[in-house]
Length: 161
Image (cartoon, helix red, strand yellow):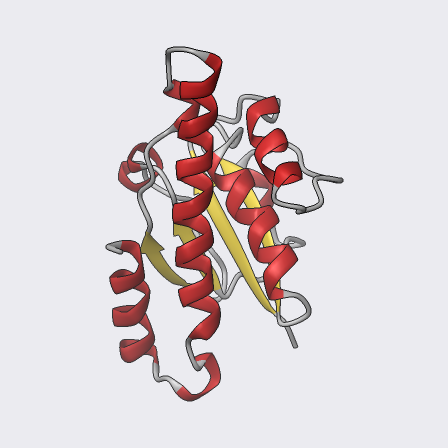
């Protein structure tokens, strides 16, 4: 049975979208990734989509959505929930059925980047690279053989890398 993973951010327009797409691309069929926001913007940043496309990662089906979609009785049961922005990490989260493992993987917000188009693209590339590296480390963990305490410790270490 695949593990369900939810990436949370405030706007669900860039970082959490990048993480969802990366994990769905690299973690299939063992992982199914989702993303959501506490205050979703309603749109996915075109720069995030461009970064994913340049990395050869599919963007079909990506959309900005509320974390409320994943707190309903009919929502998929999450095994892991990661916050990727500091705002979402400090907000009171909905109750997640099944007590998923949680960790904070803070990433600077590329949507807040200013400057030239090249500087903005560099901010998206940096966010992508950090998420890609953390997801690679996450995928390398022996999930089935680690107990909850050891797994939680490893997830927090990944968030600090």
